[in-house]
Image (tube, rainbow over all chains, first blue to last red; front, side, top):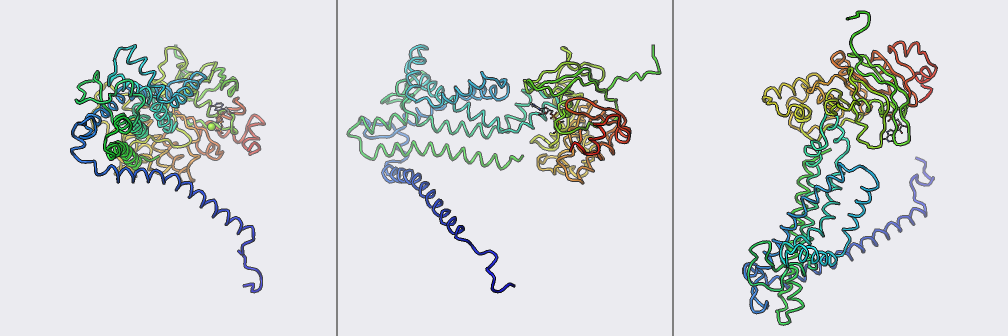
Length: 296
Length: 262
Ligand SMILES: Nc1ncnc2c1ncn2[C@@H]1O[C@H](COP(=O)(O)OP(=O)(O)OP(=O)(O)O)[C@@H](O)[C@H]1O
Ligand SMILES: [Mg+2]
């Protein structure tokens, strides 16, 4: 006990200034975050309030009638599922295979680095450019016509770079020590990949794919000229048929059908965004589940 | 034909004029080394002198880097492992490697031990009981059986570091390698773990030829029969451990052993 001496841990003026800066930074960053979240919350609320009343079992399971001013959205819903599934069938095997090659087999030289760079850049190409490519390549050159096949392949080409990049990242997150351990026991590259690398990268790969699905299902431009129809009273029977799609349907009734009831586009948007959110929730749940079991 | 005067057994590892480059950087210079079969040889030398590089050349794991160039030859049990007809997988089967950081695979303990065997026994039917036996034998040999026998299906990555390192040794055994290369196998372990793994290595002596890299002079002295001293990519001295430590032939060896290189 020293009595009169200043307390050992008394603050200086510098400390109190630091504390003010600290407070300011925290408030500013918090505000930015709020600013970011606010529009999302408002959009969601608006969709639910305006579009909620439209949604019913009937809305999801019947066709549009009266020049798309009434009725349901079944053909668009089914069409979107078709488009996404066919796009996945086309892009996932190719994308994953390419990523495995680039990450596990390709020598680390300028060519590989150039390819990786090109892929990353490809992911940034605007979707309307992909749409034009799709028209030229799939609709005209391969003569698929405007069909689900052409539209899905266009979507697949558009999403391939992202599938490749996300898969490659998941593969590279698997520690090198595992690979060396396998090689040292005489495993070939492929055995190592199949038994150790892929199983451990699976959660990341699937997460990437699911996020792709959610993105693909909302795209409009790439399918507009390649396979999605304005209005079709029937469901597609095969990949060479045209189809309606949720995203285009939303665009159409919001802008091209003046006498559609105001709530209708909100309802369609709500269904579309629910699909996407459900996908994302699935991917998050999956990731949490897998991470819970994985330890290294 | 037999000349009893000369030992007919080939060296476990024999390198002749071995040079190795990482790109433009030469890491090994004219290494001529004979590692005798069935004993423990320790490899000592200051950091960066090429110990790991030499070790990794002996099972050709260095090649995976892509920019590594080697000249000279390495014979394992009298066979040149760089000969064109050599199947890499067979080399790796004969030459097992233990790393500085234990690196069990993210599989169960059981699957870790049987991993190598499963790879090499494809096409043969191996009964379930035989597989169990292999796992048990390997784990017993590394003195791990008693502590893990009730949890063979738990993830190997959840074991303590000491147990992980023992497991990494155990998983090499079912494929019956002739040579075990160990790159500072105890440096990630605490003193108790170090003592346990050292004891284990000593137990394996005779059955396997062991080449072990260590920075621990006491360990080299305690646990090896011959010692190799390297400096900047060259082998400076190779002899019986007690000779190297008590009566080194080169000044650099003496300096290193006395701690003058750090
Ligand atoms: N993958 C690599 N690429 C380029 N140079 C390397 C590589 N690995 C090692 N080297 C270089 O080769 C030399 C020998 O390295 P090595 O790892 O064999 O030394 P070491 O004796 O095992 O050292 P330590 O005791 O620190 O483990 C070092 O100068 C190192 O920088
Ligand atoms: Mg080393």
